[in-house]
Length: 240
Image (cartoon, rainbow, N blue to C red; front, side, top):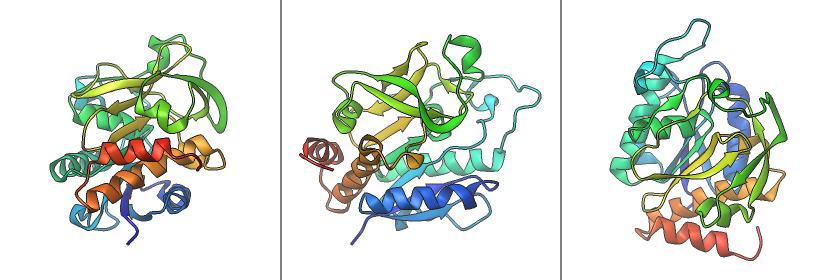
């Protein structure tokens, strides 16, 4: 049976984003379920993995920051995704965090964020779904083995970024200004967070492989096998 993947999206833009997520998960061999605050009851026992999607900034008070005027927040989604992530870790569900999702993964694991990352890092700012930004992938990481790249062209739609790392996470990519662009766990359950939006880049193999790694880990969980071993095996496959 295809692994079922719960995908969190925004109440405002979920109708537009979810079809891209569903396609990416389907291409990887899974089936996506749409989760958003007020849309349907979240049942973590009904899925084999989760994607925490992109969207509005995370409320700064969740990581010790200060509220700023003019920043769009979604407290109901913050609550939902904290519950989903904590429940996923309790159940050993594999996790893929995308943009805001990577940041929320870090926060739930006790890390902090730069509320205005471009005020801290001398990184060139982009606001596009096109792959115009370059990120350098850390050698020896699962991300490097999965994408088979030491640099990637990605899109960028974010203002926040990881500052202090959460528990059991390591940095897997940075941009030219030193801003963290990806984080990952090194043991089960599988958890990978990327600052960009691979769901808009499925026409490129490296980005499709992020979803394939998640689905491979979800299949491993179904059979009570090692998720990291499954993700590594997928990364080592000759094609796809």
